[in-house]
Amino acid sequence: MLASSDAAQPQNRLRLREVADLDDTEFSDYVQDRFNQLVTAAIADAAGYLRPVQHDLLHAPHRVHDLRDALTFAEGDLQLAGERMSYRRDPRAAHTSRRLRQVRTALHQVHRETAALSRAENRRHDAAAGRGATDTATTARSWLAHAYHARFAQLLTQAQTAVGLPVRPLAKDIFDTIEEGWADGHLTAPSTPDVERLLARGVVAFRSAVADDARDQNDRVPALRHPLLQRRWNMALDELAALTVPVARASSASALGALPSDFSHLPEPDAFKILNARRFLVAIRQRRAEHTGLINQYAGIVTGQRRVAPDHDLRSQALDTALDRLVAEHPAAATLALARLRPYATADGRLEEDVFTPALRAQVKREVLADLAVIRRPDVVLPATIVPRPVLAAPAAR
Image (cartoon, rainbow, N blue to C red; front, side):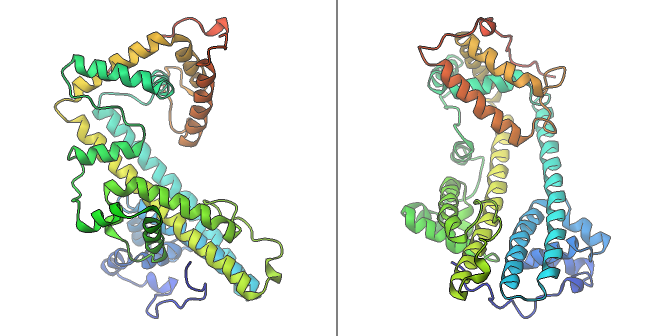
């Protein structure tokens, strides 16, 4: 766990109002130098102290993801500060509570900005690949491949072999994509001795390294950011959060929630045990946000490189062929998936992210896959309404 919640802050840390006094060059250097300085600037911005040019620099597209990470940490840090002050009946608790509300408002806005950037990037990728927005047919076909993974793998192997391609299984998750992309040379991060040492560590030792990395928010372990370690980093963060949530009396790994009702009456050692656990959970939450941004960046690079690879068209052809055959083998399942998607689509079948949000998409996918698992049972009699074969041809290039 972290040291006491009352750990001393660096003596040279600027006050919020002082950050606004930095000239543009000094401000740019300040927010790039250390993570805790970016956090200070983010809070100053949320409180309305920064000049417009400073605000714009913080919210620039290349920095907005870092700003989100800083505000995520600031939110948890301020909540913890308020909880500690309330426990000690510190009169500054009310001021800290107001500052927390300002940061939460700013974080909500930054989430909107990062989502808009993600949508714009997806549209650029789709346009470069000659596709429109995600549509019901494409999505239904991909979910069918997930539901019948073993059979689809066979069909894909056959289709790739037929057009003379080396067999490459479809990635099961984002970590497969990243690891394959590194092996193919699309991600150029070298395998250093530090990376090799981390790869060789056992589960407990690796989790300890991830915990040490999270405890020091200013200093990162560069090797931990290597593409080949992203799967293990993800698992270790999950494990650390699961171990810490009960000690922190938190609502979940992603939300601290309210303190227990008897917290104010606990002896100080017990109270600070909870507070320190909550501080560590905030650090894990920040690292989780950083990790998510990194794996999305890696996957985006791999996808972009594959789109311009010489074998891209042949691989797309083989994929479409395998999906066509899978749909032909399971028409009722394809119809069901398509029907479940239609309520969220535009008139021409597109699934716009403003409506079909990532969270909603994940929920509907879980429900559809559960329905398809039932369909695969031999004792299930399918209703006649889903027997006709759907039209699920691959969308035409635009």
